[in-house]
Length: 178
Image (tube, rainbow, N blue to C red; front, side):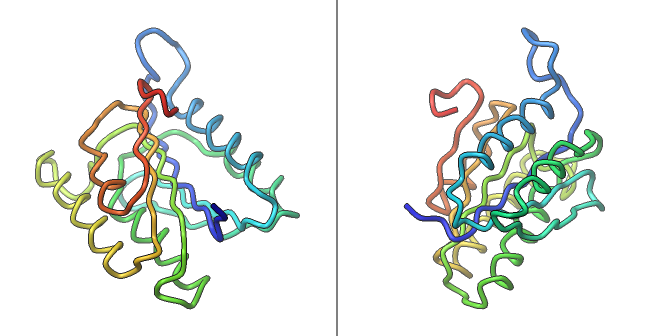
């Protein structure tokens, strides 16, 4: 498949990758994102949305092939702090693609890299996860060409609803897909 856009949401939550490794999850996430950037076809415009706490979701925009080194530097510069605003991050990434394409049904791919559940919508996990799943459904309804893939570093299968509702792929650190 050819991707027109490929956005990556990187969760900056500072926590341990797992008990067997001392590497912080953010380092593993950054390594995975950089690898994907290096492997992406040259005709693909890559975007970056970074979330670092409930009130800090930053859209870095799109990077053309000539700007890929700048994108790699931006990923390297991510500092791990904050909460996990999955809902806001998905909305911002999807809006970014809509603005870029000027076509409601433009094909677009988001790769959401996270190490945890939504923590900004509600302190109640069930309420927060319902908001995440409903947001994924609404984004797909608004843009049939949108696909959200999830790389879950927390092994939290509840996040699979995002990819299920948008036709994407869910992969966790224990999954053979990662």
